[in-house]
Image (cartoon, rainbow, N blue to C red):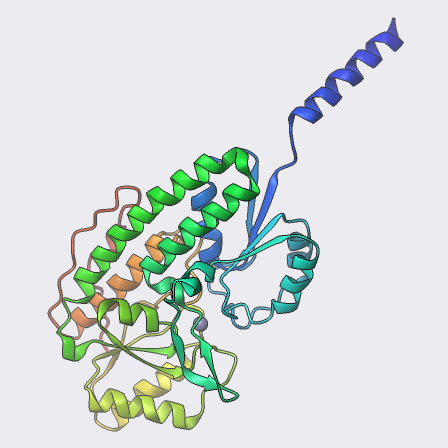
Length: 337
Ligand SMILES: [Zn+2]
């Protein structure tokens, strides 16, 4: 009897193994890319999502670790920002493509639509693309919809889920854009200057009628020079810019140097009491750990900082029903400066 039972048991287990296909493995590079992949794949069967970079990590400088390379080699789809934001990943992506892995740049549909901006600086005499396109929610809508389509073709079983998720998310992004626009445009036009450590906010500024200045260019890979600091100091003094901002993924040293130099020259400037998210979002469990939360928190950080500097602003009513604003972000916390 025993040998018969053993063979029945064997047949049953192999039938179970056949009924469970191996999961679709998706690996994302940045925190923003990881969030978008999670949104688009929510509720899909048998999809495994991993993001490589954590909160506060600078993607311009991030070197893929050995375990990142192992994870990408096991992936069916690798999702990245593109436009050389992940400057150290180029050779890894090349090798993955040769292996037949789908390597998808979220910048692809934005570039195709003609919405990618030139960087404010040239590199080796060449104009380069500004990689921070996600800071216009209308660009992120294009990325979400196009990525869902790419994934639907790679994994037809879940196609309807990917498409429905992306469509619903695009509507939330439209509401986010309207909310941010109403707030950012409430600041008097002559005071709309966003001054930060590195040039991550061109798209954001253009979307809402602001101007930007930064100590470093679009990449943090090159060091800021004394001349870069002085030109930002001159600009802050000339236009009476009331507030400067530190970014969560860039050391605050250069912006603090600007504040000191402006004050030494008799200017009145303060540092915002909260940091801006630029190239990395917050911790996964925090409000700023989602794209929508990160974006909203940045808008509130800017508006509250202007409020603290005595500028009248309007904070519009929050209408996203899937994500509520935490109480601590509702009121400006003005530090003595
Ligand atoms: Zn950047």
